[in-house]
Length: 189
Length: 189
Image (cartoon, rainbow over all chains, first blue to last red; front, side):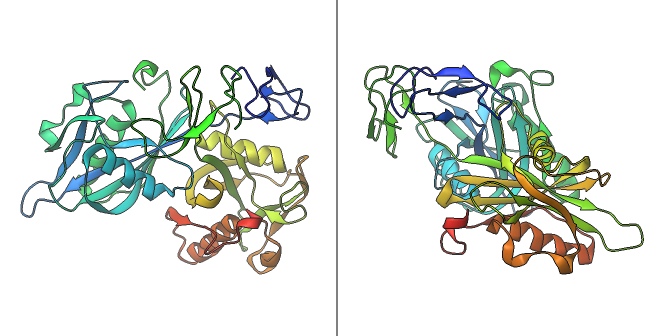
């Protein structure tokens, strides 16, 4: 931020009176421009095979960062949305899925990039999915086929690891976690 | 937003190519200025009375909106924080609490004001709390003393109601909820 979005004058970075963090401040219109973390909402769509092992849906990214790597459908939550709407919208945009039964699953803080991932488990209702414009490919994977070495983000790996662990007990509690530059590569987040 | 925060030129509100929502766009530096929901992080500090009924800590607001009304400590999450840090920081700022054992408790979407409340249960370690600059008063309440008619926000009421319901079973699952202009007053959020 270099200019005030309200009046167009240059802003200065300083600690406002009564505050304890540097903020972008406009000395003309007295506005403090706060900057806050963004929510990335998404889901883990599960295809329930009657009599067989359940499969999960992954998308291969057609965009940077991590072009060509596999991910769960997820993206920035929009204003005026609720969390579940955002998670479902991202799944529709990236994979044209038909999902329901969304249940909260992982909350992951990524303080080095000012993001919070909020991921849901979801039931995939049919196999009529196909790639959206941000995906090269969309496929169902058995656990032994997951491309662990080609996953786009640490947050996606964490969510998938918890899912396969929890599936053994058929119990899926909400997991909270932090990924930062110490336990994850910031470059690929 | 009226001016580009990168170059100071007036922005225009339009749907960028390949998008489906109106955004503030700078036609000079080609930046799309996205606007996203903010996270309000906070907690419900519990004072465990050995042999008696547990009490919860509430703060009486010294600031608008809802000056003079009672609330749980909560506020906007900052960049570079993790969720639990934000919840604890707000509790320290508003009530100088000494808390630990934070566990995720409620996630509340407020689409009409572009906010997501993320509230934790917390253990109050001592009674050395006192009001911060944003609080007029800080007190412990038994269930029958909660000022239900003087609570600041619907999100706070929801979190307290769930807590007293769950306490009967001594089981505190994570609750997700939506409050909008249909089931809550937008004016007091």
